[in-house]
Length: 207
Image 1 (cartoon, rainbow, N blue to C red):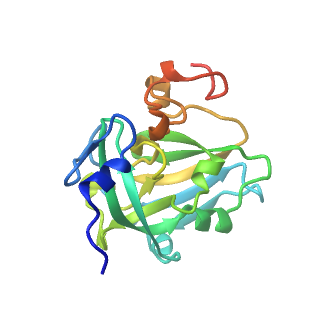
Image 2 (tube, rainbow, N blue to C red):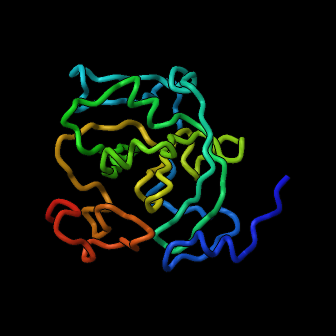
């Protein structure tokens, strides 16, 4: 068994402006949705390779190959939670089961209440991006996104919505919920890309 990581080592893993968080604060916009398994489905639509929409109910989604990643979570509110184990369905599994068309450049992640977040396809397709159903081997609580939340560890946490219901493949970028309301279109914590006024040409569509 390895020695615990030193506090100095943990500080080296913090992006600029972030502080180390013990525990996991609950942060979200709006109410916590009620999970209704008989009505729940995960959809992949938009510019799919075959032109069709792909859907899985909760039982089918839960039967997909289970993956785990060790990853950090960086919230734009300036806290970081390091080294958590996340379990669920890898984004690459979704890409294999429902491939995008060759000209897809971005995805829009859709969640309950019409919440959305846009991602470059390259960010979505990393090996650590995961539709998390578990943390530390335990199912997520409703407040933290049960039954499914997206985790994109190398971006700020708002890029991985709670209560995800599907993804839309897009051939051009389009801003999501927070991106339309002043958050940075890319959201890289190491470049401290928090707000849209920090964007440079090429970072995203005009507001």
